[in-house]
Length: 293
Length: 139
Image 1 (tube, rainbow over the protein chains, first blue to last red):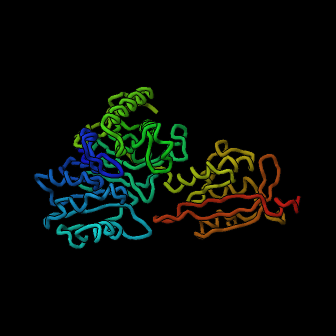
Image 2 (image 1 turned 45 degrees about the vertical axis):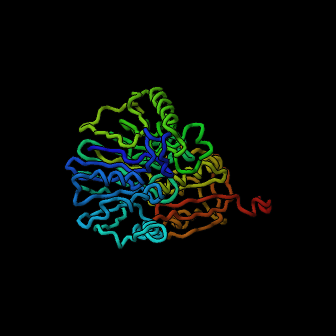
Image 3 (image 1 turned 180 degrees about the vertical axis):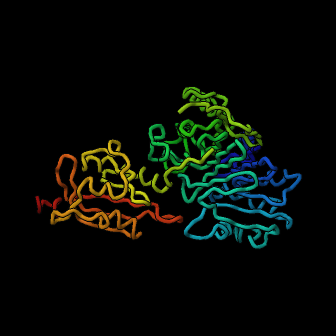
């Protein structure tokens, strides 16, 4: 399984000279499975670059949406494959009692917010609510589960062979909970991230910032590392960067995270700040946990 | 690797909320298993949840009474929490519960189901001292 980060920012695109290294595009991760199948995790503005980079465009691709906040769907109408009739796109996302996934996404892909309507997209697009049970895409087993954020929000786990990726970009598992003491089965997202080869997780706030943002649906670095330690994730990528965080700020945040992880008994190199265009290859067999529980 | 199981998010959030309340509260899952009660409920019952742990359906009802005004035990199926899970509707009752030190407490109980797009995940019950008792009208 190969992973490429096409958009690492949260909330709103934040391009500019001060964000050039970690990137300004919002959430999108490309995942190439062992058989070459392509998945896109979220469709923030980063998916535009993913679409442009597809040399050998697959006939069918899957987009797995965690939720429908704008920073996770804004790139859909700028995703080049969506405008090619030979492409089949399957969009997965959370169910809601209020309206179907298609109808909720159509609120964005419709006038006056969009120049095109869903029904006008030339590709063969379908919308599916994620099932509660595991399902398969190509060689991968996919699992989705609700996680603590604002509104119906999913996290995903993708198992392909012996490699596993957990993707939980918007997550506040420590809201009203002590992650260091809570029983495992009471931790939001635990099952998704349990012993994952790679965990891509919300790391929006520094410790100084979090108290002003309790309940906003995002994590502090300390909470993210506590979650990673409790779940036994092998490697953690901090993701969904706050739009106010410059490259220099994120450098310092990364250093702080590595020191904290080392203090927890882990290898510092197992924690990193997600950078746009970074490519990560998951090992066929995961090594032993970096930090014990 | 086999997928580990965990509590539904709605129960996790309910527990997190209950943990922050000073109102005694119980939480059961969709099978009626008592999966949590908060510190305030522990004070009322005389035993912290951490001491007791998860209690199966039909077992927890007899641990603390409960009994009606006539002193007779209330059948498990008629308890507000059980009705809320079974019927998917709120339920209310006045009843007495017995703490581990043998003291009886007259309480009002309101239970409501936790309904999600995927169906019922359980129910929450909150307890208040009965109005009559709180007003000093009864001992």
